[in-house]
Image 1 (spheres, one colour):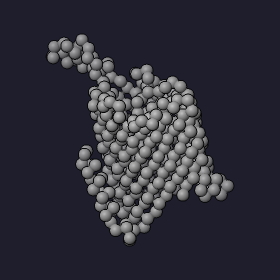
Image 2 (cartoon, helix red, strand yellow):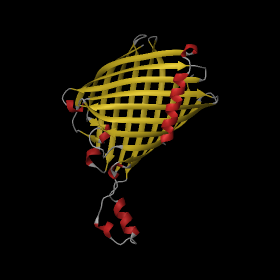
Image 3 (tube, one colour):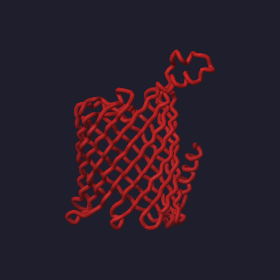
Image 4 (cartoon, helix red, strand yellow):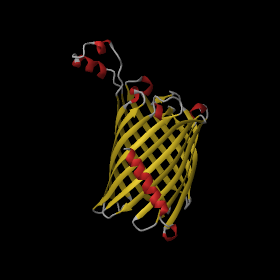
Length: 318
């Protein structure tokens, strides 16, 4: 899978080398800030909750540049920054910096592309996690109302404190987009598969994620608005092996030894519903209320909890 990263970098370098003088270009950006209530403040990458509620100021900003050297070739570069500042639990304050590059070519009817994402997160102002993802993807429009997208990914996690959770991940995803209501609405069905190989065997796992998202765009008071409703299900099975007395039995006792290893396996499941409404106030500003509820179950107590998050933010786009 390392070849995916090399190919992606090669594609991006090639796109940057195309003369920009003959290219169409576009720059977009946004700023957003608001307040959020979290019933159970959580660090997602640690699969553990604080069992405490709190409010946080949230902010988000992004800048995106789109370059089209030809009608079929598209290069997108982006930077996003998001963060939370909790009122009481400031040890959970987070910032996430994200750099991205995407290069695609439309061969009609198939689009081929490569992308690279790099992010680093801070926790309580200290560097916490570096994450990298390289993808190769294929997309195709079927008829007028269905778009199919498939990708393979090579990902890695590097934690600042300790190396046990550091991992390499091989993944794949498939999405089917169904457009209706004159393309103002779409329904997306998606599936993700990840195989994570961590430095410590206790964190090796396989992830299955199912996603369904409905997006509807409409006009209120002459301004564009958008409603989004999403649901996802995750099943994450760990390959944790605990050494027991059965492991010391004779090598020909395969059934007993295998049973001992299976009984120590950790399994996490999640069911999450999310809803948001972007209400346009004018051509620049919009108001965005958000709600989400997650039910997380696990064989590990610290990863077994419920979580409700509600927030509202003011967004400016340019």
